[in-house]
Length: 191
Image (tube, one colour):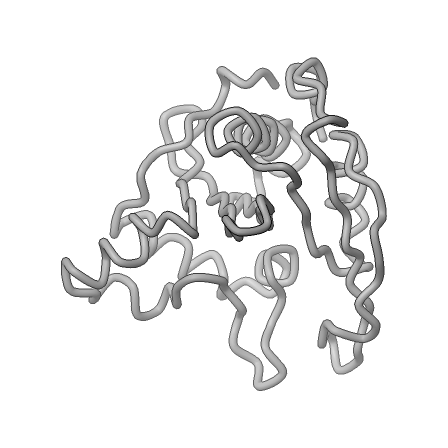
């Protein structure tokens, strides 16, 4: 899948309602941020179950925040997911998260194309020095995806993820701007 196969668009209220619906599926929620210890699906920056009723000011505060770059992923003319880059401007860091909510489109390259676009934006548009991810150890496909883009293991957060009644480690991976090559973004088919 090429970078042109996906668009990163401004988040709409309809998109947030779909995110909320997708996160009711355990497999999707676990592949995103997982669940909080009390069971609700985790989401950085905003709570999808409350976002549709945000006031205009609250909506702008969340979705126009310079510290949180949140985009809807569109492919084939449809909303299929969300990417989020949480920026720590003082450090030049960005924490990347990618959700493909349409399970029928998993492993067809759409998540890879969106990942490539947001990495490119992070380094070339937002001027980041480093982009990193925090992936539960059981999400081997995501670990493989980020490894493909040049992310390297930087550490482990021990038993930081509740999952299926147990605790699992999170794998912290990162890539520096000096390690990034844009050729990788166009060679990401079917990841």
